[in-house]
Length: 241
Image 1 (tube, rainbow, N blue to C red):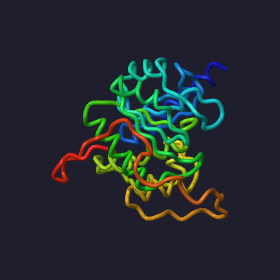
Image 2: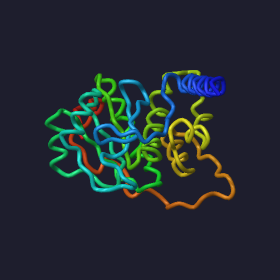
Image 3: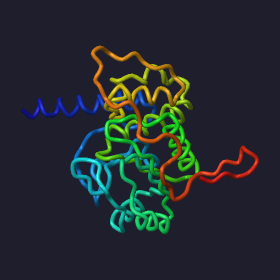
Image 4: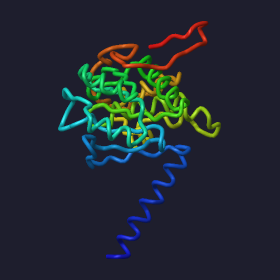
């Protein structure tokens, strides 16, 4: 039994090592239900820079929620100064005020459960994440449980920004159902094609029979709400979202 347990642990470590190598330093998504100061399923995709988790106080689906002193203390302890939410519900104004007072920016992109974000949502969020990292900060991305929509946003950033700096990365080859599910937690084919479109890749062919989901995201475009955002000066003057 001891040998079997050792082999099981060793095999898992080898698998994680191979996945990490394939992801060029990113950590593969590991589903877990551990709770820490209001958050479930917290983990780093890029150590010290990009994290993911459930909504605060997650039970079984998207619900109205808040980021209070306990959650903000936790975020500060992790060095997080930017929050991206793909939850159906935005946080109340008081929560946004608390985040702002703690110098944590907040960006809400409303996306229904199991739905794909719009291409523009993914591209906009990737810019926000990249700007936060380049400024020396860290980002938390969450949806409901912190798997499908969260994984889609994180994968969108990885394929648009992070992996483009690695010439050996086969981004087109990575953007398939198996790879995005196993490494990012993407849950369905519509989410896969949203990631592909955000990275300017042609749609992948759906397997037959394809599962039937809704026809698209709830909203298109900019974050539905935010406390602050990056500034871009390439247009002649700073534009702040």
